[in-house]
Length: 302
Image (cartoon, rainbow, N blue to C red):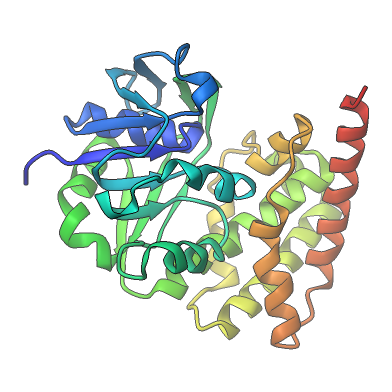
């Protein structure tokens, strides 16, 4: 397959990792940046990764150009504003959102059409430390994509796997999306509520018990939504995570930025209400995160 044209909307930790990897593979990559950042944004992406250290050129633009694939990797709280850069959606082939949560799929499909938006998730700890400079901290990067994306992205996924990514095409979309949600939401909420990395949560019996209850609540909602998930698989997966790893929600609160609470926890809370499933522990953790976030913002406000 000939090289594809890609645009990255949200060149942060995740978007920068994807963009640098695509450019490394020989595809055309455009970094879509804010107008005020265009003049100073570097002409190269620098990636430090356990897979490979990469320095690759990218095109810079304030608008999404004509591309085969648009990867959206902004924070859920920034999604609506960022879409102003999609000025000519008819020139975009496929759209692959890598946001946390689930509800963004319906929003994007309403705007751009159901067939164009390909469901996908990524699990990774990757951080933008400066414009165009990305540090991939976790020893893994797990990218799962709906099987609907195989015809276009099949060769790209194969190349990602050769670089070190763990990638899978998933037939069942509810299972694809909820499999990440039931893993991410409990650990994001727990690490942020208790202000601890994964190891800190796991080593405290009370905090670990709350995390486990949150996992079970999330899995109950996911099952009611038609997904095939297993709480015991989540517990087993967590035992393999780096104990020093911190969630992006925890980092947002530490930096007094709005956490993605509605995107991450909202589907569990709303699903619990809709299916009459008790989600008391999830709500308590959300309340704790909101309190920490409000305190951090208050300290930062002059």
